[in-house]
Length: 161
Image (cartoon, rainbow, N blue to C red):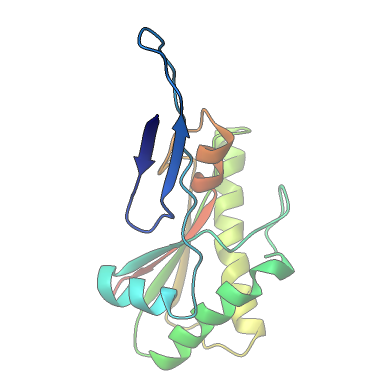
C-alpha cells in the first residue's frame, strides 16, 4: 500500500492511497483546497502578513459585481476596515490567463473597484482604500489546469500604511 500526502500552509491537507506493483509507475495529482476564510481569517492574515488573498469573493464571468455568495468574506473585510479606520489598504484584482491580456487587465481593475463599491454601499468608509488590477500578470499557480486558474482568480487586499 502506497500513501501520498500533501500539506501546505493555508491549505487543507490531501492524501491518496493505492496499491502499486513493483515495476509499476503511477502519476499522482493531489489538489489542495484553500482553507475557508473563517470569521477571523481576514484580520489574522492582514495583521500577520500585511496582505490577504481572498478566494471567497466570486464574480460571474466577465462581470465586476461580487456574487451574493461572496458576502460572508466581504462582511469580514468590512469588519476589519471598520475596526481599523486609520489603516490604508489597496484592493487588487487578479485574473487567470483565459482571454486577452488587455481585457483581463481591465477586468481585474473593475473587479477591485467593484469590491470597493460594495464596501461603500454597505456603509464602510472607503477613503483609505485604493484599487488596482494586475490582470493575469501575478499568478500564484499554473494556468495550465482548472484548479490553478481558480487560484489565480482572486482579490488581494494589502496594507499599504
